[in-house]
Every structure is written in structure tokens, then in C-alpha cells.
Image (tube, rainbow, N blue to C red; front, side):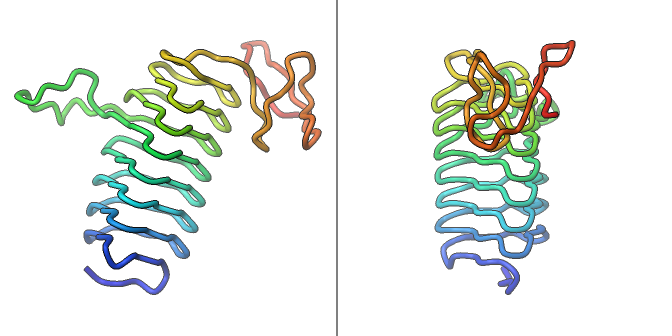
Length: 191
């Protein structure tokens, strides 16, 4: 293991080579980055995080403590993963049946937030700037800007890119004044 002056690696953390770690990224206590992982610039990888082979993590992501990100997961730029978020990569695992050829891709788009203890079942796409509430179980694709919570996840409203819940009766954000509109497909779009 070689130390790279471009990013911070706690003395108890491991980065297997070859892997790509962007400048100004910080990897904290007891974390393990597998060979082939790609982590962008200015990310925070919290304590006790496992990042599997071939995982792709964009710039500016925050991955809180106690998270395993398995092969097949892609986090775009500025994704927030709260403590103990759970990702899966096989729909029907069995300890006695090898299913590595059945890993499903999970895509978390730019700016999305995954709350503490949320479970993301493999094969879904979480849209840009969506917010998944703490403890939510996501089993289906999530629209951009959607506010989701429950087991299984259900949409409870819309979120602004700045992280504020949009009021039901008006789509301009009360905090940053960004205007939004629903398109013909019922998807929220900033104007």
C-alpha cells in the first residue's frame, strides 16, 4: 500500500492497488477500498466503509460511517449517503449458489441524498437531487427531485436542489426561489 499525498488516508484504512482516489478525498478509520474502485475528488469516506471492486464514486460525495458499497453501484457527483445505508447487488442471494454473474447495476444520480439506514435494492436508479428518507427501502426507480420514505418507498413530495421540501401548493422553492414545473410525464423540472 502506498500513501498518496493528494488524498488523506487514515493509518487504519486500506486502499488496494490499483485504484483511483481523487485529490482532497479523505478516507477514515477502518475503511477498505478494493482494487479497481474509482473515487472522485473531494469525497469523504467515513469510518468502517467498504468500497468494492469496480465501484464508481463521483466528485464531492459524502459516504458516512458503516456502509458497504458493492460492485455494481455507481454514485454520481455530490451524492450523500447517511450512516449505515445498505446497498445490495443480487436480487435473490443464497449462500450456497454463486450469483456473481447476476449482479445488477444501481445508479444514484447527481446530488441525491440517501438517509441513514436506507436500503437500496439493486437494479434501481435514484434520480438527481432525490431525497430518500431515513430507514426507507427503495425497491423501484425514483424520479429526480422526489421525496421518498416508507417501507417500501413511496413518494411524499418534491425536493429542491438546495435540499428544501417544496410546498404542495407552489413549485418555486421557498428558500432559494428556484422555479420548477411538472412536465407532461409528471416529472419535476427546474426552469
